[in-house]
Image (cartoon, rainbow, N blue to C red; front, side, top):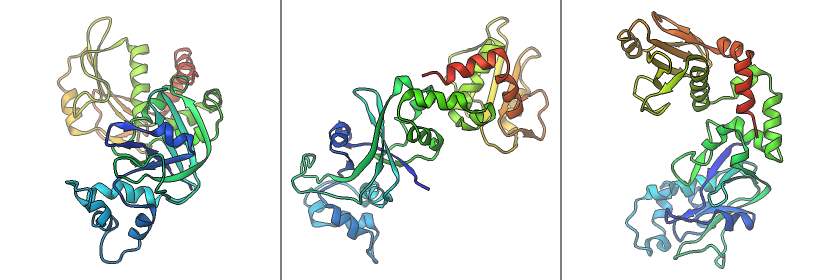
Length: 308
């Protein structure tokens, strides 16, 4: 089963050369003066780790960088990506997502256009390339450009989203595929962040929810959604769990909910259901979500969610 990788073609943490590499049917990284063969050799050493082998190469030592062998771990990861996996890149200047299949082992060229500042560009060749405009994709795809913290990151939480891009040629194809999904499949498609967005939409539409100074999903350690009803100003607290299995309400959330006034409401949006003590807490699970998306308000939300 192919895996998906978010690759940032950035040198020196600031200079983005993604488009230059893409136009050459390539995706790649730098990480010093080692060559592609050096990277391949690093994987078969018996006495040192691949990263340590690269760190001790004379060509890298000659750069006089104040770094540790940990600096080279993304390069090792890039070298190990199997042929046939998929790369996801982002073009910041045009706000586009590019996906392409990796169709070669790691390569380098002493005369490569992207050899910069004494560093050798290590690249993989690409095929089956396509580009999607971020603004024309469902909102969940805005999570892809920021995936991971380094330049080489396996995509673990948005596999279904990338898979749908692979199956599509245009943004309209993506929207059509989502609209054609049965509601239960579409709800399964949602990741944790999208589930929080879905739950927030439900509260806005059905409860008149207004966020009050705290960002959804980054509110407090105990809660994911904090706000008030637009009408009477009563409080709404919510915790969201997208796990497909039944979840238990945490002691901390129960303790917080016990402090609410009579007209306030606590929600536990547990996709896989809830077990254990849930006194004074409204549970909203997969079945509730399926019933809601069958209502007029829910259907309208799904239309907006899947719109191109």
